[in-house]
Length: 294
Image (cartoon, rainbow, N blue to C red):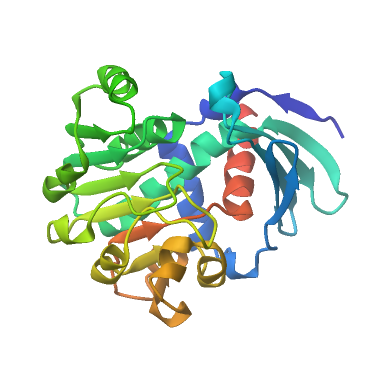
């Protein structure tokens, strides 16, 4: 079987609308995130390597992600990665994809699906915490599902935040108090403590939190979790990895999943979308990329 090498540009060319629909179709078709293999983490070199496998009876895949917190100071990306897509029956490699690009496409696409499932159709005001690639990707992805015409950016460095906002249409620099007027708040940071006071959220605001996958780290406070309720990829994974959920004291019975809403099995509409990233998401989008390339 021929093994294809797929570049970052080819991965990102799939675009957020098609990525969102691929995720929706997979969940609607019966994919069960609760049965996924657990992510492995190995401390190596200047950080850690994540190993994220997934598969079904047709295809299988594994992503290797290197996370080096010191890289930005070296002028390098914080995350590098490689994804290998296999034919499941034979386990012959079908394609090797740029893993960092796959993450840049997958994470905002999952968030956008969540927003499309729970946010009112006319919401327009977005506040984004973060100035990195995920913040940029979330702005684009959320604009693919909602008519966002106001973006306020909150960052640690005023210079970097000003530069970032200047590159985004209809964006401006703000501080954490901007959440009081936001329809959607997207947290795309490496923060380990809450970024804002949940009491400041207006009624009906939707919050997206993607920055942490460790029990000890969280981007939103207990007030936000309790006020909004939580939409997660998998109940089991959320109570094992999602610090925002764990530190707020929620258990599995208090969580709603993407699959619940896509399939219409639960009428609830939580307003906190907390994701940690799972292998099935990479597999679905990697397969969509390969199919789109023909």
